Amino acid sequence: MIPAYLHKVQYYETDCMQIVHHSNYIRFFEEARIDFLEKLGVSYVEIERSGYVVPVLSASAEYKSMATFGDTLAVCVKFEEFTGIRFSFSYKVYDVATGILRATGKTSHCYLKDGKPVNIKRALPETYESMLGQVGLESQLS
Amino acid sequence: MIPAYLHKVQYYETDCMQIVHHSNYIRFFEEARIDFLEKLGVSYVEIERSGYVVPVLSASAEYKSMATFGDTLAVCVKFEEFTGIRFSFSYKVYDVATGILRATGKTSHCYLKDGKPVNIKRALPETYESMLGQVGLESQLS
Amino acid sequence: MIPAYLHKVQYYETDCMQIVHHSNYIRFFEEARIDFLEKLGVSYVEIERSGYVVPVLSASAEYKSMATFGDTLAVCVKFEEFTGIRFSFSYKVYDVATGILRATGKTSHCYLKDGKPVNIKRALPETYESMLGQVGLESQLS
Amino acid sequence: MIPAYLHKVQYYETDCMQIVHHSNYIRFFEEARIDFLEKLGVSYVEIERSGYVVPVLSASAEYKSMATFGDTLAVCVKFEEFTGIRFSFSYKVYDVATGILRATGKTSHCYLKDGKPVNIKRALPETYESMLGQVGLESQLS
Image (cartoon, each protein chain N blue to C red):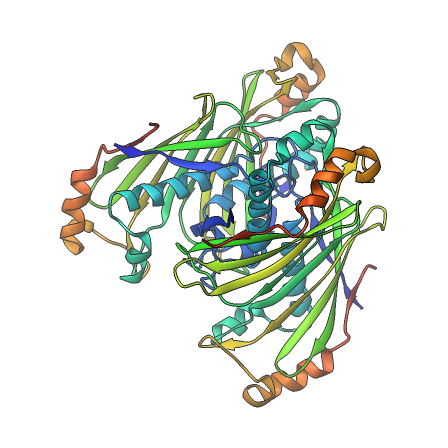
């Protein structure tokens, strides 16, 4: 089992509504996605060192309930889709203490080299095979 | 005409891909939305003073091209929908110098009082009438 | 021994100089300070629940070397001074992998109730005694 | 007269103490510094294009009073010192509506090329002369 990513809510992540500012969930998705990839053996630092970047093409979040300062959140990531060029992840954010769902979300991505989208199947066949095998994997609350 | 909201990209808004970090667009949407409402005569500060909050229920962004440090962005806002309870805005972010589209997005919202969703038609009839009349309004690049 | 607080550098914390944006160290100090207090048995959430806030009166950082995406930082906190009203912490941020010093800093604080500074000795004698005994304590890299 | 830089406090810049989070003043200093340099004819974007970066060596802030969502702040910048290698700015942040001082601060900087500090007098004699002539300049509330 791939364990969910844990994030403790910081004071600077709250806003004057006294909850986590909604934009931060997009950042929690990023934290969790990079952690998830690391647990699958994929180092984002190394991807960038080999000349690629993996920008976010789209991001969305649905806010279900409110998190506050000091809460510990668990972010579960699922590798949803891979077209050979574009790929996407979905996210579920839970409050660890209560199990209550805080938010869900989705992001999509591609590989870029020299500013241009990369056909992963042709340019990075090993990466392609490895990614194909990982579609459907997800991290979970233990 | 309601003029678009202008945002100059700050150094701290960029990331090591040397572009604006994608999460910041969600913040630009918020800046532009509050500015848009102000131009329609709606003060968010006063809404909160009267005991309501207007949380974000969902937010999404599609990233079309990359903005970098020092760019001036124009955020056009459109009041898209109003069900009497839930309402939504859409956004288009342009680079002012070139007119190139950087991102599009959407957010949805409701009024909350004491943590509970408010039926605006019943609880705030004047606000309801005023909001109904504003559906479809949008800000624009001059 | 009180262990140092660990922070993994996130992508969104970097800037287009491809290093951690300097403003984020002020946030790392806050993360580490709250963690340090928790390890001493002081819950910031409970302080606020009892009607106090503990604002930052001053903050400073000296940047010694540059941290980049993916680095793990250790923040060592020391409770430096306590006048009975005002108190201060100092910070040392190290790269965990190499032991290289990234930054040092200092913050000062007071208790506020209803917007006014609190003389801790008079208003919170138990807190006063407990704080006096903790001056000089520090967290450390293991 | 060089006019002060104006910054409207955004919702996402507040924290659950319902004031501007203290770390954001370090960001306001950056916004104001870059704006100040631009008004003196110095483009930070061009500095970076010519292969230099200007990191922050130290930053400090003293918080005098609290700013809240929707406030307009004026940041006055003063070019304080220039040693030929290191240079510093000081800042005063006022609430525009009331003239109340919110914060003061200071930052110091140097030029770096290929990761090494640059002796500006030797490496950039024109920049050196120009900077010497600007020491003491400051922006002001009109």
